[in-house]
Length: 525
Image (cartoon, rainbow, N blue to C red):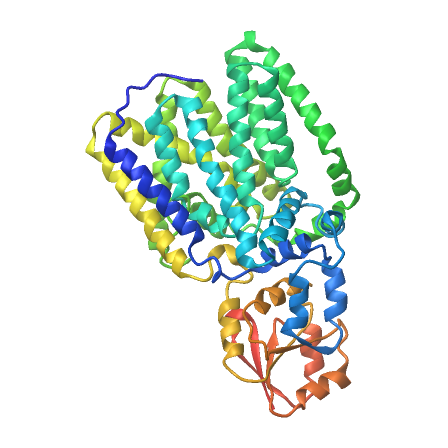
């Protein structure tokens, strides 16, 4: 796995590393209490507190007034619940999400409290733990400290890694376990010991219990093993150990695999949002470019602005050329490892998209575990330039760091991000509602039955005097009329279903669609 590179380790690089690590920590913690606690994070809270979404929905969508305090009780630990309630909630309603992260989060928040800051801090810890492991992974590949330091710098300052580190979701843990898995596989191929293969098996099992798409990493590793045997057929025992490790993983994963297979229809229904009528290749290409370049810069000039993509193409071109430079370097195992770890998971999403007309390959959070190998690849290329004393290396490094810092600075000041759809506008929605006294929010479960997550998201930001009137799927028109005729109240309609809009049509009330981005109406008598 290793090859010697003559590198210099100047003091300026160590100073730069210290500065970047400090910035990486600061950016990860910056304003996490002010970031929108979005839809998916609300479901993290539902699982970790021991509730079920249906249980909450059946309680609150009952054609009655509800205070923010009443809704807020579902954002705290469920009385007399235990960790098995968390597992049961996932198994019944979200079987596509294995339980490891949610179990850890439950115990974490029992210690530090159930709040957005506490919940997000766990993801930040996992994100920071990834830094030493990507260092050792880079060393295992190239035996070059300069490459390893640069890889740490890129991950520490990565805009996309910081965005997901500030979310109460399992993606930071997924990245951490992916890096550990890759590191242990390389160690196994280098030195076949029971300890190495056991640690490799353990990291993979934990990865499978973290996210279903960790299996994409295993696909990439299987391709690597096959290629490794082609290059070194005398090492065929590695295939036997790899298969034994895989068999052990399957056995250990049987409990959740059974849960998933038993409730697979629920999982497919929960992810049906990825299905589209046709594949818009213009849109898909844009999302791919944005997805594979937000590792170094998250800056854009508008989604439909051509300058966004001209700017981002620099980072994409740099990445592609960096892979080419690794290919030209006399280390086929390193190149195969890096290219398979990046392309195989991506293609494993693209091919089903083509077959089933879906768009999962455009979702950045599904690709985030492929990004560490891109950091390492670009780090290797830049280390070559720096070792050769070329000014171009310092120019590119300076540009990458500047682009990342600007992106992270903007993210630190923003309460939302592109990764928080469909809750992107909830902060502004809350401000508009809080701006008037005696506000009542009329809503229901929505056309796609997903409003619960966004109502919980809003609840963190609403004033205590705000009330909800949440209807059943068939609104009680008599009770709805009472609310509409209430004196001295300000009525809002948030993400209503067609059923609710139809029920409101029979009343003498004007609905102004005054904030369409956030799907917020203002009711006027």
